[in-house]
Image (cartoon, rainbow, N blue to C red; front, side):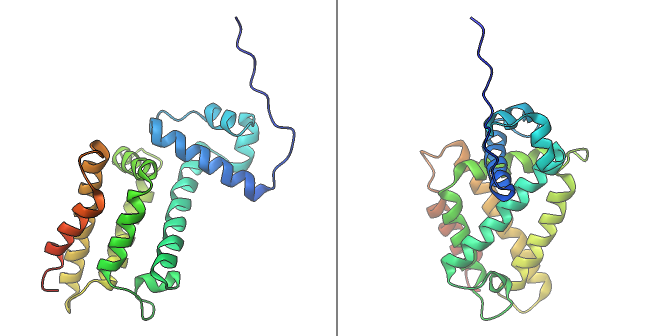
Length: 204
């Protein structure tokens, strides 16, 4: 029996709403399949669009990937700031701000509640180690930017020491998240992070 064709929506969504829908569908598909397994046809089907209609909104598959990554970073910043009760710019030392440990603990709690998003970033970050990957430059710049932001609010008086601590924090957080994604039933991400943080921040 022939499978009936997917029906496309006739209603036109506002541009911002359509873009949000596209990003949400793409995020889910990449988390399931990785970037190389992502089909623009599947994204279009998930949004009840044709592929040309999808490309009208995003331009290209590479543009879509970067849009997904940037959207996640922006969403995390807003959510963390709200949870910590500060303005977004105060997360990174532009005011009274918060401590590095507070920011990291809040981020781990948020990540523990969204395993599919964490898996998305873990998959893409690993894939993008290949220089030809469309997110290669994005993750390279993101790593540098993250180190700069974390070192800005890290405890300590010396720039080198703060930078080193920021690197250790990122390494520990990323490593724990990989272990957690592989065996979520056996590992409590929040408890594991707090135990590690006790050591990382001891005496600081």
